[in-house]
Length: 291
Image 1 (cartoon, rainbow, N blue to C red):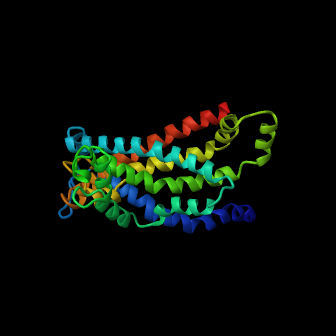
Image 2 (image 1 turned 180 degrees about the vertical axis):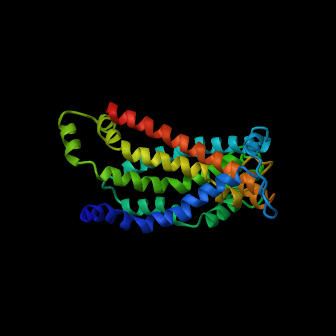
Image 3 (image 1 turned 90 degrees about the vertical axis):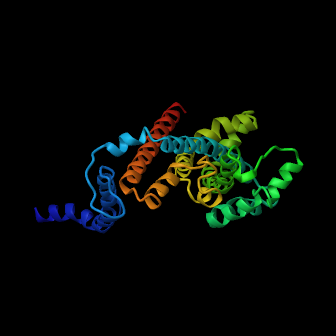
């Protein structure tokens, strides 16, 4: 009896340190933030329980709906393009071509550089007065208005920075997936007369389904968590046209000091990301079964 109990208890003893750390630094903060979202908590003072009032107020808050819309636009504009470009570069750089390692390093380099430094550099390049890129685009006849300060162009410019930074990271994931595909499958398909597109559609895409699922989920999470480059390049402006949900959370919590309201926004963001992740899992699982 004691031997059986010890065998059952041993795994839990090994798991205990990790479970304690997760409970203290993940579980309790989540529970605490959920409770805070139901109060009118501020930086100072005693919080008062107000139930779901913070969540109800969100839907009549034009700044929240604007931030939600900007976040959705940013996600729709960056995640799909980043994933497609990453897959394209991975397929190209998985071949034995001259300078392959150099191009891999160049594409991955932006991801390992501080996003703050990258954003400062891009902010200068897109400045309407001294920006190199704005000057070049003007010479080419591209109407860019007031550059990064133009309400119509600020969000697209920020999207470009996000795509440029993340493509190399996603490419590395796809390269790992491509290198796990047995070469014999391509050789057999080529012998059967399958062309490059047929091999890509019938072999590469199906066998990369798990990698694609992970990359798409990470891309979506990155997009909904966008903060650094937006804070540095535009600070949410001009006229809140680049303010995302994370930017609004920061502003509400640390500028307006409405901790309860900011926590409610955070939980809405968590639920949106969770829902998107579940939808993506269901979609990719169905594709895997169909393959």
